[in-house]
Amino acid sequence: MYSINVPLPSAVTSLAADLAADLPLAQRRGRGEHTLVAKRLGGGDHTAYARLEAQGREALRGQSAFEARISGVEQFETAVTGPSPVVYLAVESPGLVALHERLCERFDPVDEMEGDAYVPHVTVARGGDRDAAARLVERDIEPIRWTVDELSFYDADRNHPVSRVSLPG
Image (cartoon, rainbow, N blue to C red):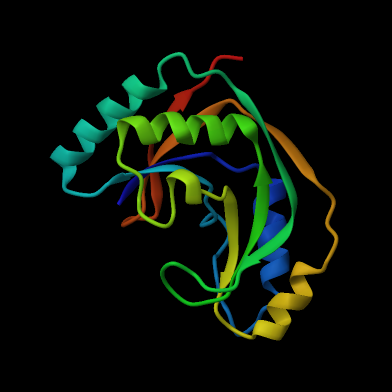
């Protein structure tokens, strides 16, 4: 699966890793594995990727930089896919939501995850102890703000960015 992702500042990935330590029975993401998906594009081989990237770059033409903010710790009690609960860092960003909506006009939304169901977030951990997850959700955190001035095309099968696109300020 390929996607367009928002690169995360180290303060966000460090916070996610630190919080995950309080969920020892959950599936945690390692440092460098945290993502913020703007829009899933689809899957396929290298030929498909080249086509998806070209379409994505065209859809991103004229996209300006925008602000994002980690506002708290939340959870999906029942995940659409994979183990539950999913503890995550909530992301507030009208610019990201608008970008997602625009990309959904170009690429079909994934049912139950995108379009009207889109919740910008950074996964901390999946599964594990529900009580521990509930306690973590009640924790107050310092908000983290940053300017999103680039996006990445991401290969989820290989778990790494393939290329980047700069956004004008």
